[in-house]
Image (cartoon, rainbow, N blue to C red):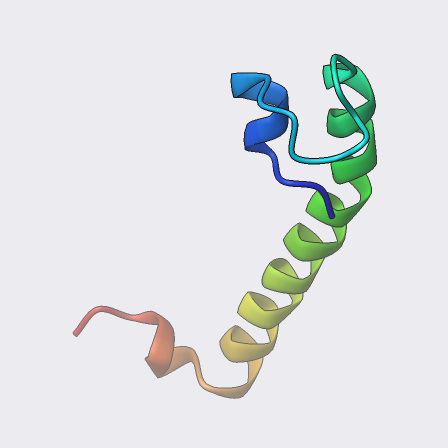
Amino acid sequence: PIAPQTASVGVSTSKFVRKEGDVIRHNMGWTFILLAYLILLAIGFYLVAPAVMSLK
């Protein structure tokens, strides 16, 4: 993945200089993969050990 601050700050950290849209599009896939992983992890914990999810 390419550093997300490249899109916001505009500092050249890779070959994507002045191509903020390309950086965002490149990172979008990684973002969805990570999000899906976290959701699956949460569902797994909920099914296996619901007590872990409570704040008691």
